[in-house]
Image 1: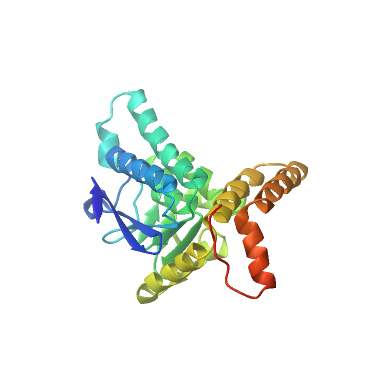
Image 2: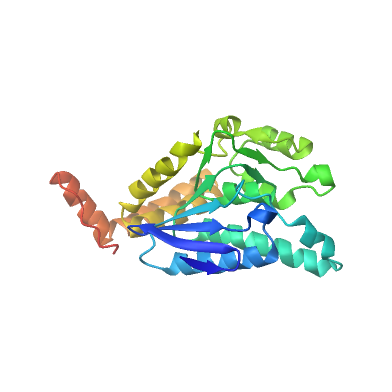
Length: 261
């Protein structure tokens, strides 16, 4: 296991990597140090050809409480706040724009920037008792950056209720509104996350990379532009060795032998 400040990384199996935010005393708050560590690690794993899937989780009682309020209180200059929030945005963009699928494994609270972090991941599974919130309004700091990620997963009315009240929502409701994929008992969560990661890891790395990039890019386009763009992507994808191998394997009723080319 490798540790970079407040973040641990380990290989689970077959290209599946786990990133653990390991600062339980601050409820895995996203301090400047932790954000820098996470950015460094995600950049490294996104460039690593042996990494197929990334699982992101928090240690201790919960996933992440968001920004470190004690750190925020020490800031005196506008530039210090801007630097922190830009760092946080850089992390979210690295996750979304990165080449690898990221699964958030959530337990306890995922609040504010912690909720933003879970929403930024491609997939999210949680325990049945996990809670999600954008509670900045309660301390006079509207969750403006967290709402960017969360509002791209849930509808406007539901998002605004979370933002305006600051009230936490349950895992069951989070699944209902599309913030997470599913929720399980604590004993079953690890099994379900690993099962999902293994299924994704069994696919062509190249195909997954192409698809993830195209998914987020087309989602910001008009319908006509999206179809034009994805038609081009599929054409280029079809020229890859893995697409030809996958089609041949399907026709021949055998397991494909991915070359990631």
